[in-house]
Picture: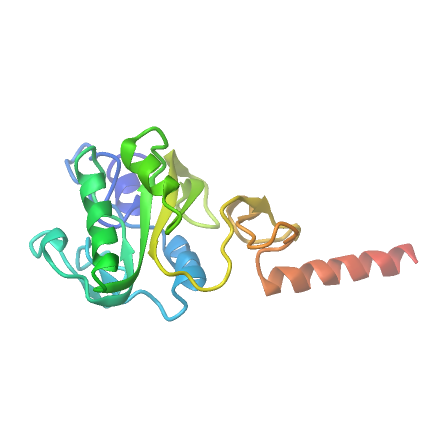
Length: 213
């Protein structure tokens, strides 16, 4: 999948560059937003400050006309995937951090390109108050082929509850529906990505024992 179709599917009002039609507004895969919401914002995201009416990932959103960089982000949990660029990326991330520091937003979950050699990446990775996780290349959906040509990452500003893994593992359930069965365990000995996969693995294990018994 190339050209306009690729760009429509990849991010929410954001991309590492424009397509042949000149747009930088792509749509984040729903499965990824759902996954990150389940982990970081169980009550859901209530603001998307870099969106269009067609691709907003929260009930409240700002469009390009509203200019999310100029607005206060008064929200409990913010989803942020903005137009990427050498100037734009550090500006949006600085805005996200400032909104949390000012108490306007409790949590901001940002999807960014994993530009590990940049000054902004090194700054946030070194900050113990900021959660950074490389998630690799994003698939367009959990059941279709195709992935982004660049690695992505998640940067989270705000106080996190519970434990969150920074390093990937492969779910032990052979039928795990996640792309590449990849997940980020909060515990180093975590074997499955979810209670459903844990139960499925248990059933497979028990079935194998019965056959061998």
